[in-house]
Image 1 (cartoon, rainbow, N blue to C red):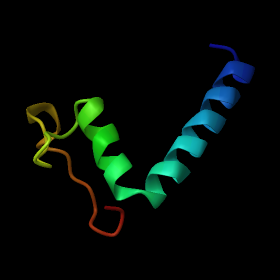
Image 2 (cartoon, helix red, strand yellow):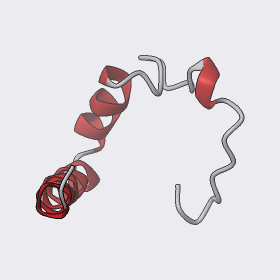
Image 3 (tube, rainbow, N blue to C red):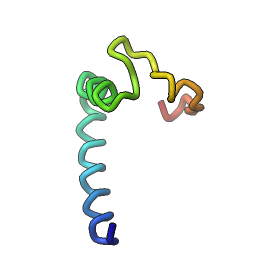
Length: 57
């Protein structure tokens, strides 16, 4: 990945982050779709031991 490609990817990620930050339903759907949480909102096994500070959650 070139520097330019990386920058373009980061711009896309930032747009996605801003969109999801405004819509909790879309954010949950995204996390379910990528396999981080279940449809009930529980973390999937590979992510259960992550430590996320509460001020960032």
